[in-house]
Image 1 (tube, rainbow, N blue to C red):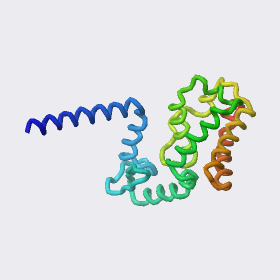
Image 2: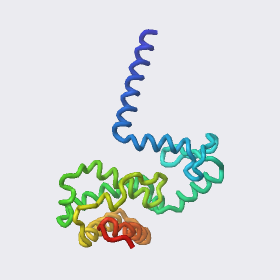
Image 3: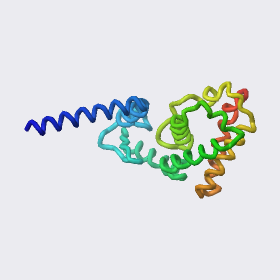
Image 4: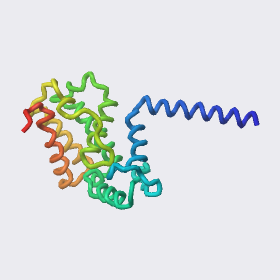
Length: 196
């Protein structure tokens, strides 16, 4: 009995450490996970725990069946899903930054940047921008790039690296065109141009 209680205590300590580590690493993700299970992502109303689905290893709950149907249709129709979902976005961002950090035109912008954090933020941003299930909660593009002195040439270099990454990953041109269209919606903000 002592051995069982001792093992349970050890497991409890380990679980507490893992939860605390997760909170320290990304408290927003834990908060978003909790919110996804209590508030319907479509209606904003409290969820019915009997109306759920799993998507990319995560359980989602909805207020009514119609919300679940709408949400699932949005996932199916999203550029995010057409590109391959989380796994594809993760792979693309990793390959993209290999190119960016080798590109003399733009690599200096990342000299004093935590690339682990940068990759994580880029994955979150692109996932949201392409219609993934989690909303973007980071800085808006104007604030995030403010004071960097970015020019049209810098924006084009980043876009070129993104397109080349997608081509390397054998993404169909039709989807690459859609990715470029999304990227272009951020251009004025990234370059700090006056709002139209």
